[in-house]
Image (cartoon, rainbow over all chains, first blue to last red; front, side, top):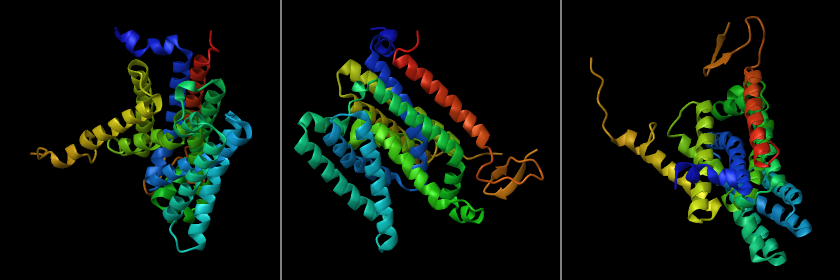
Length: 290
Length: 53
């Protein structure tokens, strides 16, 4: 098998591979910078919780309209926002911390979602909702994913600086009159939107994979925020491309293949990345000499 | 001409004498980047959906 047949031909020959590849590109452009901001704001596990929180809304959408793209997306978006708002509310009016309330609400959401899909649909439907099928992304789903990525890029261009300032110095943000609470809510909306986009391709259980794994891997390769975002998006797209090829040539399920490739990149980054990796920490380097 | 505002290394890209918010400076450049990336993404999507000849 020559290189063209191995690396390019599947995307030229088959429309479903082309759509899956562009869906990966869109998810990379949207999820890459959002994942970096989640890591910087110490909200990595909140992303995971919100990805599970999408499930009951999508399940109710499924119950109402079957596997309808619009209704399931809308339901997932509403459920994700509801869990984010409820968790924040509980954290503010009770002594409980926000991570604890997120954990409680996401577990309730996950159980509720699985219950709804199991009672109203078949096992195939449940597997579709939980694990997604990126190779089954049709034109309508691709348009949704690309639209969400576009909106994410534009919104981050406008509010990204405020979000970064809030990460590092919320006191300064307040001093210059920055709307901290509004920025935080807008950011949560972006996270949920991107999780809904990822949910169609990778399912609710792995939607957060293309958001978090590239972002945490990028931390070992870059230190500037813009470079982190670019590195994160590049790792996400490379993982998507490689995972799709692995899936095609070795007949593996595509979603787990993509996430495992991203996981492999993370392991390599932990071991051999130039910034703070095991290699950089434990391998003695030469002292500078005059 | 750029002048630093001296807070966490954020540069104020406004001209001297023009008040600029440290939260919004550089927004036009970032929007141009976002617009460029989005355009490329939509071209790729059109290719994937068979809309391009």
